[in-house]
Amino acid sequence: MNEEFLEAELAMAENSHPEELAEEPITEWLYDPADAEREEIGLRGLIGTVEVLEEDVIWDTR
Image (cartoon, rainbow, N blue to C red; front, side):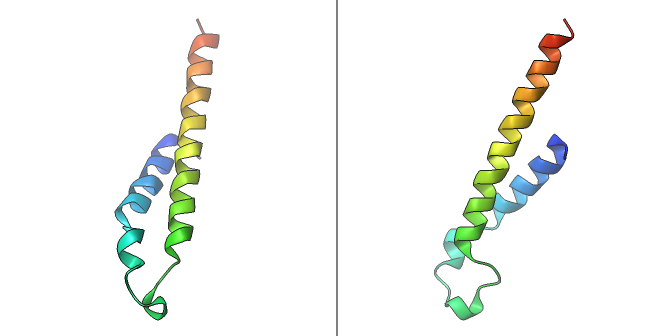
């Protein structure tokens, strides 16, 4: 996975507005809002990890 892919996935998760979906009847849900929030949190963690690893590579090459 690269950072651009993770950024795109995070943008999709942020734009999904799970809080609005929670106001709809459960039978209308295409996905569980809690799952969307967990995915967004996971993506943010992955992006943070990629950024740390990229910083380590920069420091190792100096």
